[in-house]
Amino acid sequence: MRVRDPEALRRWRQRRGLSQRDLAYLCRCSQATISLLERGTMPSLRDELALNLANRLQVPWEELFDPGGETPQSQRTDEVELADGSSTTETSVVDMSVVEPAAIDVSSTESPDTEG
Image 1 (cartoon, rainbow, N blue to C red):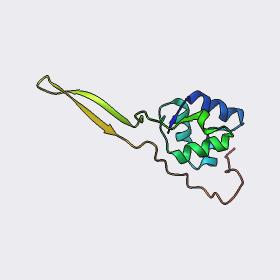
Image 2: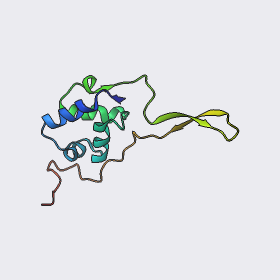
Image 3: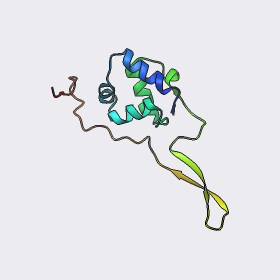
């Protein structure tokens, strides 16, 4: 899946009164993942995470995410110039949608401790 509008994701999170860290905790992903999604630098993600985000934000997933058809951001094709002056294309794939859940105890409903 891909994020339709990264700014909309940020606006919905803020409307729900959640920090990036809070939303990440609730969705069992990293705060960095939420940040990347909101900045549009990681527009493709696993279906499971997209549905979880939509559920936690209480927004229909179709408003936030598009199931696709487009090339994921993690796949990139570049034209490379060779030493002899000719060129070729090179495709690189990085699976950016795989995010390890934070090492947290989700059996408790309490928020994580904050330093203060």
